[in-house]
Length: 527
Image (cartoon, rainbow, N blue to C red):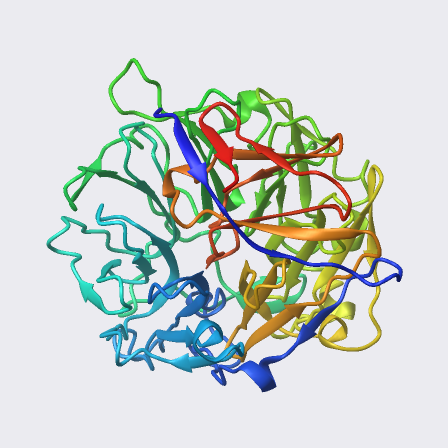
């Protein structure tokens, strides 16, 4: 892998008043827009194709330096190719000084009305502009960006032919040749013209059928040819079809070679290694390395994946969100093997009644360690505490890091106290104040802009912009300040059907000196 000198932009450094550290996430959609309601079939959902919802994607679409918003929107079962359409919203912060989102879909030339599920925003064509790969229920779509926010469908010209039900596209330089490849996670072999029986019995209740009993799909690996085209190689040969809901390319063991972690729904997860000395065929090491299941050996319904350094070892730990009556799972790794430490750190019990989707480790209170936020909401509209020990509408869960444990925080007002049917979210410093905000999308519900108003009496936040370093995806960054060391991984696509802005957030002592180092692959230098 090529060694690079990465020059980053310190987007913002925030000073704080003399008051106690606090977590404050505030819904500001009424002020910023967009006023947009997503579409994912009918309300309430009547089949599994309607329950996963839309995708949120944050990136600089028009090249003006601030973060814009793309919503991968769905359609209806009766007309899956002609929905209300996906939408692109321009952030006017750099233009007007105010965070607002304005619909620029028509001006951008985007006419995507197929049932879209997620979007990945990276330079896939080698022209240093951020393109959009949109996964769909139906053929995926590649939109080329001209650098000014106008997009052209080049799917066929790029040699991309990925049919079926795709849930996410995980980019990374898997073959170490200097460009970005794509791993496409796919879900169920679904035919709108011949759907399966709509319901089954669960805990005495009639509920939406699937995915168990339905045919899973095989994932796809698209290798970048370096000339704007891709080839679908048989890298997944020997890996059985699965109900793929999430994937991330990640340097798990620090050898500068990316592995692929795949979260499957109700099946064992995958840890795929592409041997350097053989034909391009993945080897699944999930079972031998402890990633396939939880500590009880139980297969889980993995939706969201969060990557962080819980034990401060410099190796990436993984948190996954799962179905209700199960817990979310924390897997600690030494780079070689994963060990389930969910209950040891207090993550398990608060999540048992919840059904989690997007989750992310991030420093919400600027104290230097990573807290956890998870968006929740059931798939069964008839779920109640009495019938399923869970509810259809659920609040977001914030779990603050306190030493070696996580503490769940109860909120009695505002966005964090409200019950919703949340699905996708993406994170980024939308208002450029030195912390990570988020945009969420509810199932057949509104898109919300959530402002992070983090405050700490003695610390400040720093956001690193990695938009010019797409090859840093999947790799670790380390910051050193006054003897304090923090590790972060650049994994923008782990949010469920979401794509976060290409940014990494740290916090340091307000009076501390700052230096930043990479991990051998990337040498970070401040201006």
